[in-house]
Length: 442
Image (cartoon, rainbow, N blue to C red; front, side):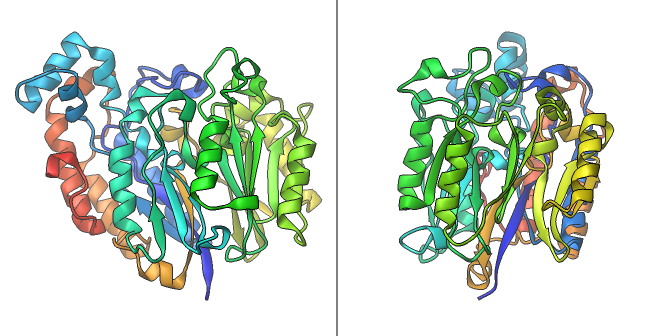
C-alpha cells in the first residue's frame, strides 16, 4: 500500500501579532511590539503549502486555536460579558490578556509527537499532543489540539490519540519540534530520535540562561506510550546552543528519511547518538551532514533559521525548503551553494518568504506537523484537511474575507476581535468538516 509523509501545515490565526511572549526565542523578543499583518502571514503560509504540493509533497492543514481565549480569563476570576472580560483583562492583567491573544498555535510542529504505525508494536499510529507547559501563552492549546487531532485521526483501529502528558515542568513536552524519524522508506519501520534539553535527574547539566523546554522524562514517557521499544534514541541538546537562542532542536537540526542535517554544536555526545541511530536503521546507511561552526556560526544559524527548514523528498532527491533569511545571510547562503554543488545529499534549496512567521520566531519547519499515512489511513481521516487546489482557493478566500490587514499592539484590546475570530473559525470548521471543536461553539 502506498505510504507517504503528509505535511500538515498550521493555518495562521486571525490574531497573529508580535507580543514577544516566548522567552528564549530571539526573533520573538527582537520584534516585540511591531505591527503585524495577519492576512499577509496566512497567505504566505498558504503559498508555501501550494508550492510544496506542486513539488509532489502531500499537504494537510490544521486550524488555528480560538483567540482571544476568554475561557482562560474566566478561570482567572474575570466575570461579565465576553467583551467586558476582555476590556477588564487589558486594564488589570495585560500580560495574561496578551497571552490569551497569541496565535502561536500556527507552529504545529509543537502540536504533537507522532509515531507511524510501522514503528509501533501494535501497528497503529500513536499521537501525543504536547502540553507546552513551559510557556503560558501556549500551555492553553493542549485541550483543543487534542480535540482536533481526535476528530481528524478518529479511526480507533488505525490511530491512538493519547492525552497530553501531565502539566508539570518535569514532563515538559514541546512536540515534534524535538522529534525526528529516520527510515529507508516512509512505510518501513524506522528509528525515532527524541532530543531533550534537560534531564530532571541532572538539572545542573541543562542551560543556564534560557529554559530547556523538553525534558528527557517527557520524551521517554512518549516513547513508552507509543510502544516504540528499541526504535527510540534519546539525545541531549547542547545546553550552550539553547542559551544562544536554540529553544527547540528544529532550530539546529533537521532530518528526513535516511539523512540528518545538523550543526556541529547541536548535540551532546554526537558520535554516540549517530551510532545509536545507525544501529536502529540496521541495513539502511544513515547519511549525516554536519555544518561546521567555522563556516556557519550558531548565531547565523539562529538568525537565518537554516535548520528550521523542511527536508522533503522529491523525484529529484532531498530538497531543502528554507526561509528567505537563509538566502540573505552570507555565511548560510555560501554554505548552501557549496553543499548543493558537492552532491552531498541535498539536491536543491527552495527559498520562501515567510517573514511574518519568521519575525515571531517560526520558520518553515515550525509551520508543519509530519504524519506518515498509507492510503487506508488517509481515506479514514475524519475531516476535509488534505490539501488540494480547490481547498487552497477556499482557504485563500476565507483569509481575504476575515483577516485584518494589520494588528498593532494597541489593536489587541479591541473587543471586536472576539466576534471576528469566532465568525472566521465557525466558517473554517465548515470548510474543513471539523465539527465544533472550540469552546465558544459548545
